[in-house]
Length: 242
Image 1 (cartoon, rainbow, N blue to C red):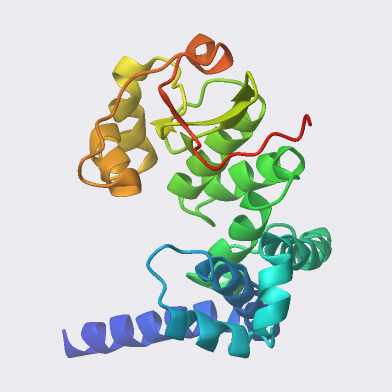
Image 2: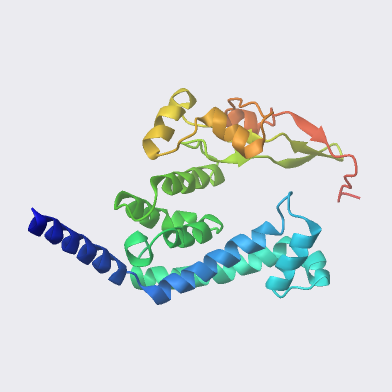
């Protein structure tokens, strides 16, 4: 019995060591830095970030206050482009850098960069394949698929994507209320969410996304297309048609 326990222990440690040896540490380090930049730039625009925190982040990113005020979201767009170039190079060499190659949570780094790019359509098949192999959580695959569908004007599947839009009418500007983008077969969405690994129902997720007072409503693509969603007048709006 003692011999059996020792054998099992040695086998287990050997397995763990083999798993650790399978991690590409240099690639992991590179992806961790890419992910850090992806998330840090976005933190500058979070509603709950304090002036002190924002100042600290700008210093960390080597951006002065004047440059930030002048460029704003353009800074994020530029960094996203640089990140995407690196991720494309990595994928061309290794395929999707998943759990086996770089461990967790680094296996989500490439996903974040692709999700924030205009190249989801190109890389979604690769991401789906990684999900099926267990290299990436299926919830991440679901979110990317939903975003791709929404960006192409189609109904999403899992209800992960929110939406709000701006439009002009009679020289005035309007902002639609926040909604969950239309869902295909919305009555069975919670069943699909559970199967994909989501712990929240669509109703719970909507409140988590937009706040406790948010009430989930079902909308159709026709509602979105024909502006049938409640909208608020933007008081200080200035039309460009002058």
